[in-house]
Length: 142
Image (cartoon, rainbow, N blue to C red; front, top):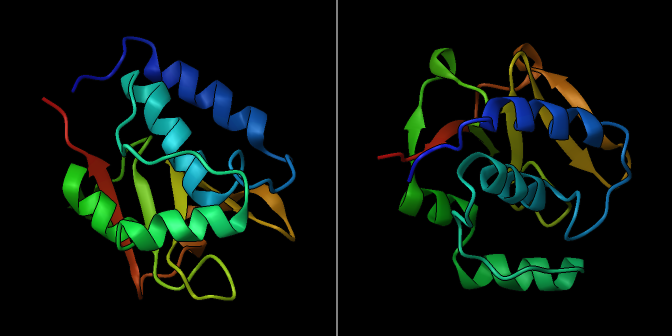
């Protein structure tokens, strides 16, 4: 899998356009943002997950694949915090909702995109992301 020629410009523009958007399942929930971003970077579906439009469908999907950590292990490699690159994925243990599922963020230059129903999509400075329980992932490329 190779990155598209203009992936970095496209990702920056798209990520910037999401800031301030309200939370919506299937569009601006944490997993959907990461899925869409990887599609922008690689031009194809990296995770091979069905789309959802509700919390119930999203959770059923993630339970069916044993969570995003399991999905990431199949197509990405962990990277150290100091080696993050634009487009990398931030996985926070128990970070997304009251069910204590793992939370995802997308790393974009010096910030990560974060979303939840209360805030919508916001920028989170890298230094505010907790080290404990957080792993960073990069999709494998050829």
